[in-house]
Image 1 (tube, rainbow, N blue to C red):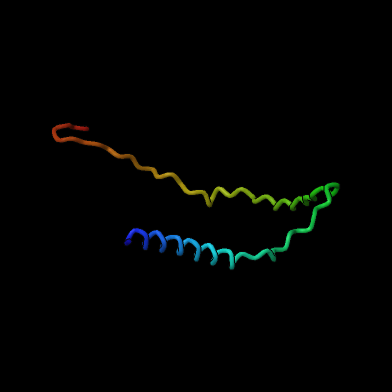
Image 2 (cartoon, rainbow, N blue to C red):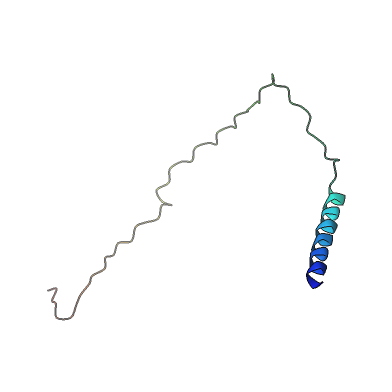
Length: 77
C-alpha cells in the first residue's frame, strides 16, 4: 500500500509540475520581421587612429644584475 501511495504521489507531482510549466508558457513572442535577401549588410570602416610617436624613454629597462651561485669551499678569486 505504501508503494502505491509513493507511485500516486510521484504521478501527481509530475502532472502538477507539467501543468505549472504549461501555464507559464506564452506564445506572445514577437517574431523579427523578415529580411530582404537582396539587401546586403553594410559595413562602414572606422577611421584609423593617428599613429603614436615612438618613445624610447617610456620603455622599461632590463635589470643589469646577475645571480652568482657559490658553494662552500669554492673560491672565485
